[in-house]
Figure 1 (cartoon, rainbow, N blue to C red):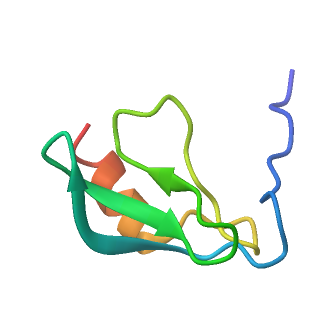
Figure 2: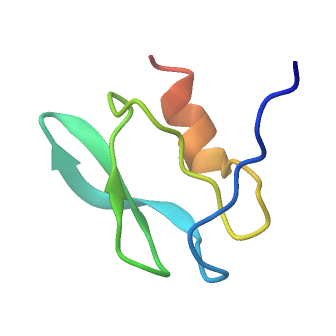
Figure 3: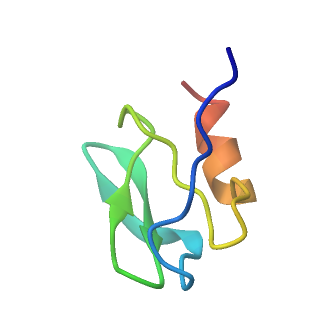
Length: 63
């Protein structure tokens, strides 16, 4: 059985690390919609191309 396709929430999604932290972890945010993410979240952000951004991958490696 194949996994379902994942799609960014908007065509503007672009995830980047911010200078802020949340619970001692680097906070990443989407420049398109303003959503925020830390590596303890159960989901993985993708950008508008469907790619996992490098900043997100670096955080996933720390899980």
